[in-house]
Image (tube, rainbow, N blue to C red; front, side, top):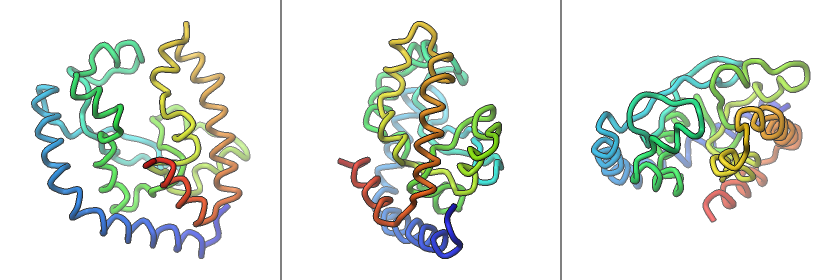
Length: 195
């Protein structure tokens, strides 16, 4: 578990990097929001409740990539994905609004990805360490499963595969990340996510 000093270093880095990037990404974000709105036929700003630090829900921001209402099944998600939305997801540009989550203090640049209710909030025993820190935009599990949608689509039962293979592996990786946290490793994960 991170010490108080490590948490202060991590949060300080989150704020500094966010403030440096904010002026650079503001205009591109507005353009992407307009294009996402036109593509999806509704507000291009997507908000969903996710589980954060200490199991508390928070509004999670993304750019909208799907037409119609929210979809849960992976096949339905791909079927409803707009052409522009597919490009946003592939390039990960749909994640840019999470800069606001980082500035608000709901998220960090690096950490376990925040999940919807039914996963992270049901962790038991030692696995609950994952909820001791802010969820992140990227991290070791995010990098390993960068093509998670395609991996799930190749399975006969995507939900079962997620629940029995991917999710337990992510839990293991996220626990190891927290137990061995260092600022240097956070920088490495950011570098790997970009390049």
